[in-house]
Image 1 (tube, rainbow, N blue to C red):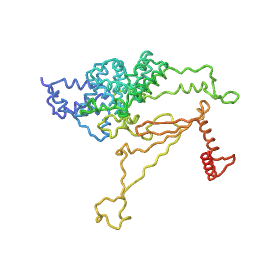
Image 2 (cartoon, helix red, strand yellow; image 1 turned 135 degrees about the vertical axis):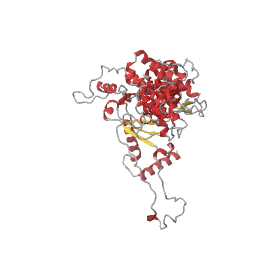
Image 3 (cartoon, one colour; image 1 turned 180 degrees about the vertical axis):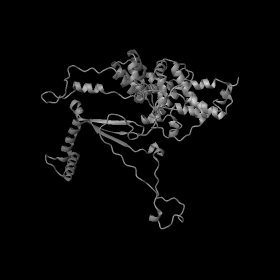
Image 4 (tube, rainbow, N blue to C red; image 1 turned 30 degrees about the vertical axis):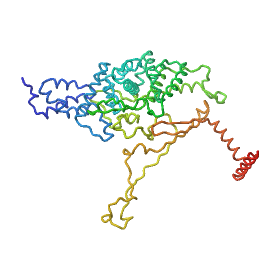
Length: 501
């Protein structure tokens, strides 16, 4: 007997399919799958090729908008959204089933990476519902060992991608739920990837992961030995540019050769969070407070200082993920910037085809940390064309069509090239509490265009001594202050005496 749904017009049938597939935003479209399997006629009418707009509507109800492509002004089609929906549902199914097979794993991991980079709320809630953190931990235990086979996935690519997903998916709550054995294993797995910034091959230093401080000399020796084999003509990053041996994956139905940034800084944060799970032991010989009852300050560490340091917690990327334990009717719809752009500028430069520069530029306000002080910025000027009735005796209708060199145009902020970013100078000093415990220091440095921040620390006492010495040497001759002319004459006389000698 023919179903009544087969007799209704196709546009109405497709509208019903959209309502069925969008009924539970944070759950897989099980009802939609049952609706497709109810009849062969309905299956053909709602196939991926003939009704791509249906799947695009379901994608919009379950996931965040494709912010990576919107940011670069590249419009996505219904066909692209439908293919991306299939990829993401396949990823969620793999994570739920704990499928660790290498078939399609690289594509699924890249899909998860893009979901996190584009996430405003819904993408990460979808991953939390299927326990993606537990899944990526299982993947790391299997594929991060240097002795293991690459399974045809590309050893370096799959390992760096797994490390990125570990740093982006593991929250402090997840780390607390791990057993001590699993924590030690995780530290051993990610420890070699903390040194990628030093251009060291992680497979060559996999033996560092024993957690013992006695191997620090071996670590330094391994770094020096590895850097000896790196010629100046080699690339500035290690195995992050896959242009020579590109791995192509699909994003919104299009084939791309993606690349990712150095995960060393995120790995360091994850490693520090693992170390902070064990409380810092307070030495018993330290005084309880820095200021004694007599009122004399104690120069050195006190118990209150150690307790304050132990209270600090390294922020992780996944700590700000909202709780996904709410009903589907209360699914949040956040229209703010995606977390990949809001919490980490490097995460947003994922696709090599869409990036405008090889290196990212430092943006004011994007650096996170414990800072106390002020910084100054130049306000944007309103640049506009001249008004002819004020500065020209020729009416606009009779003026020539040649461009006026005095006319200036402002470039929109989102169209500026990263190479035009201005240099950033950083200066600072330690707080008074730090001065009592460890001595005062002043800092100065710069922020490079690739995001690297270089700071130099100088002791205040050493700086004061050097300043006093320079003051006495330059502005005092024979114990009496003299003018600059007298100082120059004295220097010339000393030079003549040395020449005669």
